[in-house]
Length: 371
Image 1 (cartoon, rainbow, N blue to C red):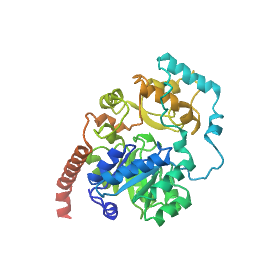
Image 2 (tube, rainbow, N blue to C red):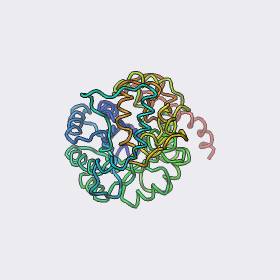
Image 3 (tube, helix red, strand yellow):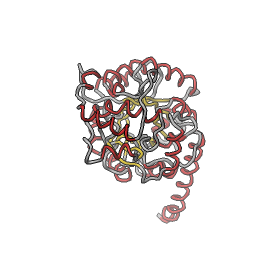
Image 4 (cartoon, helix red, strand yellow):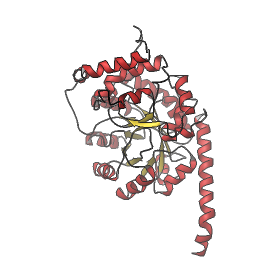
């Protein structure tokens, strides 16, 4: 699974693995891919530095990258308290009602709430980059499209390639104009924030729109055959995220959640604004259903929704409230039926890729020889 891009980055396989877990990212790099560590949960720059120190010690000198969440337009002077004040009391009361209906206890006095809005604020992302550029990262990816121009320039000064996710050809052309090096064409099937276009349609559209730039296929990819399909459509690699959630190196907070993922089918996900305020594919739960209920207040825009539900999500996770417990995950969840190591996932990807290539060669061989 080697392409021009993988050769440029010095990786054996053109597999780019996004994950919030350092142990998974390091294992992806050791297996010959590009582990990309998600930084959104690191509101503390020192904590990110500790994780990158760990990555340095556990990647065996293999390349790795970082994924941040940074808006293209700079917004100054807005604090977390300012955003908190914008949340209507009616929405807070609705959260309390949903949690009470399912008997979810309060967090204890010594419990720390998990992910909050700070990871989505520009200054936090900039603090993360101040740390990251002290390390030999090879790739900087931005989940909200093109980062600000000064960030792209700074990355290039450090010889770091910049990638941005795109859900349409229009987005992809904007990334190219902004100076992005790699476009991740993320289809509707993907976990997390997605657009409306499926990968089979999106990837070739983006490849054509940004001719000359490498494209990574993303969304609904978890097997070697699907990687081969992405490359056949013109991509120079595959961006995988969901498939790592059930690896043995992952650090999911709940055994109940792992079992839900292993049991889920490809139809058991939904694009919902319940988590962040933007459509994000995740397991369908009674929590996502509650935010679709016409009797409810509806979701708030990003970043208000994320801050509104942060404590609630922490409570649901801590007490493993099964009907409400979910996570961002793509439609590939239907093929995530067992826990495997990252290396075992790579072995399966390699074998599947070889099967797909052999199959195409058998079909195309006679035609090519006649030509």
